[in-house]
Length: 126
Image (cartoon, rainbow, N blue to C red; front, side, top):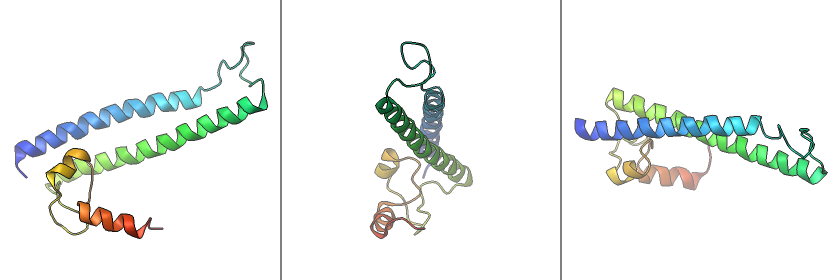
């Protein structure tokens, strides 16, 4: 991959990282401060048990989203490191070239489409 192309992908990854960090920060703030002024009386206690269940569900959902975003941030950091090492755009499994269309769609991907499909068919590794 040419240096100019690497710079474009690096800039895209840096922008994506900054945006995700902002999203993570706002989601963390929302999850931790949910219920600060819940209810008309200013108390943080829900009025009904259904509200408590709903609040818990929303908080769990937000925490799940946060975990996904943190994983994506980690993948972005690894992709930036691969750029620095001159290994960006190479599949980490088969050492083949990752198609630019795939990198445009998922700039932090470490796998070519074939290896990613094989991994998805095999299921999660435990």
